[in-house]
Image (cartoon, one colour):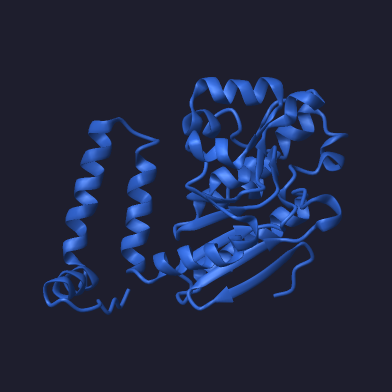
Length: 257
């Protein structure tokens, strides 16, 4: 389907969604977020797509939520429409793996959107930040919650209270991003990583994602029990039998998903 603020591509088993509002550094307006939900729904329903990549331009992943749309809101209007929850949380509801690749600015809502993905690959020009304090508000899409879980209280307090930006090197050092690559190579690297994941059994990658996410929602004891039960469940999969047989027979597996 046609989109106004997105560009959508497929690369074999990988679906790629580009934010495309260059005049606003990909600021996340309501229409863009609605389109993003539609694009994610299509990729989730497509059995040929195993992994989703969410990305922006060389200059900006997304420079934040659209301040022009927020400026006139009141407490009651924001509360009644459940502002930011609607549409934004669709990223967190994806069952298939979703990777954020960030070049340039990922600020405010852009940083929060990247953190909703399963992991972040950053270009060496990436800049992350939660600058909401500078415009008289606080992060509202996970900037005080996910950020603290990912990088710790001290770093999160620093960023949320000063509004400063964190470069790619620091982001990798404190665990916000999984790896840093030259910005010019980011497009190729994200497809390479996504294609690697897509080569495995789709049910198993979805199970692995669900199990890792449990670590943020439960105690260690409960998480280990969940992991063990999902691990046991894989023993009923044809792909598990194929994978182990291929290993023993020293050949490449042929997963059927």
